[in-house]
Image 1 (cartoon, rainbow, N blue to C red):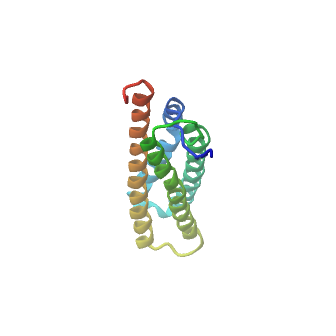
Image 2: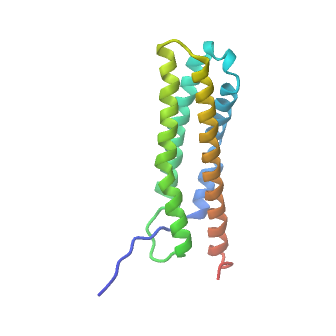
Image 3: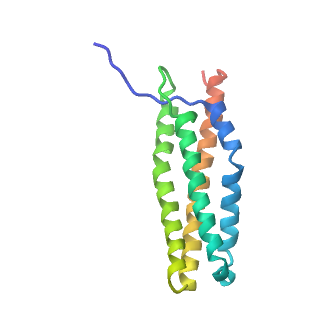
Length: 158
């Protein structure tokens, strides 16, 4: 009786290229964080904040799509099980991270249609900083996985 299993391969070289090419994502995150650090002058800038969140949401969707389609989530015949489990765990975080950013974008957009409460701006800023910290931790763990995959591919893991 043959046993077929679903595995995950890690195309480390391509994933590293994807990560290196996401300058726009990093820039959008930086600009969004900078705007949210100064809520007292943001009222006239709400359109820009909403625009940044929209672009960031779209760029994050592209980032995760590329990782999942061409990075390290492909079927393979043989793969180191410990890498497979970690890759799947990281992949499973994509939906939550994207959902969290979508909620932030919606909250920011909601400010355009009603009175602007500075406490809401501060809350959005705090929630964005928390999102950014979780996202950066996620990316760091993906980078660690890439490095381990390179090491494994080069025979250093044997």
